[in-house]
Length: 539
Image (cartoon, rainbow, N blue to C red; front, side):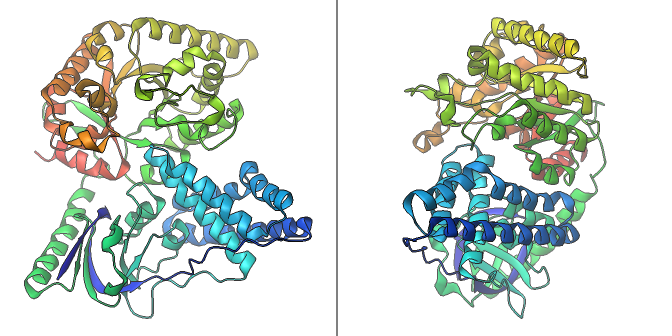
């Protein structure tokens, strides 16, 4: 018996024979072409064909998984219309007189690597979307058919990775589960697997060997373990685990639609963190009470200029309307440090995590800040909006922010543009300075949201990007818990609410502590919401 260890992304235990999905991974050869314009036409025709295929895939996915999940393929269509993407391809063809297949492959890899190098988990996962779109165009250019998935008999699929369009086409009656060498829990592939109820483990790396093809395996999508050729005792244990997992899913479903009220009567909103409108599919299926953190960086990354006000307004409006009156807290741009956009022309810094980032960029580039605020206030007419400002360290910063917000509101009034005058303004408590003076800050804002990821690294002086100091990063450190308690207590004294939007929000070993100190909101990845509700309610 061999046991492989990866990341479980879709709970459940499945067993069956392993079938490797083999693709033609051959790189596209570079060829010179005599007629560049004819080659551009070939690309345009393939792009149009890809658009048609994605339209069909959208319809099929709507019927299979619902409209929210199918929206991904409309996003893929938008990628094929993206000027930066298309002009990169046609520019290579015209400038270098090369074949379209090679230009598409090179551009796809370039854009994919750009996303993959970002630290933000959401943006990192867009790497797979770009490759998926590019491979579709290449298949049309080369006359290839979509790869067949599964087989005549039910099996477990194994692959280096699965792109979203492949996962959406999986036949649940034939694919019992899947395992991959790469991937993460934030990918659309993982989200689709959870929606379809297909147990899945990703990130197995080099331990996933092709010599396992055809062998009998068990996949545990909760623990992230894969058992190859299990013995009789292990098989019995895994079958028992499968029964327990099914019972646990039924147990969690009993908390859907219930308010998370503590034994002493305190209501806690259990909300979702998202990175873009297309994450709504997971939020709406997770029984979230609202959105506690909408990261707006997706609008700024992966482009060559600042996003216009109208683009931002439409994105924010889409989310607010979809949440239908539930609170949506949108964080203003948090560019800098690990999230870089070249057109910002930020200086190279020795310690970017403590450099020009987040609110510091907004206050030193007020024209960029005002554009985002105008879009946010305009969108507030379509739902319940909270605006949250990151990386705060002083009262003077908050006063300046409020001054700019007031100016924007006056501009909109003068222009006759409707907005909600009761938009709540809040700040992230993610620096020790903000936590220590939270009594003063609470006098100036409507809410606090404690960003435990940065608060942990700044409090413990541990770089969360540095694997060498990971063992020194105690996320339950007493200093951190004291700062959380102090922040919540100061918020309540001032009559405002306090939530948590970092990774600790989903840590059920801390739920009792959060209840004790009186946290009003917990915002987390959608997949953790029912677990949190169960922890609060099952007493």
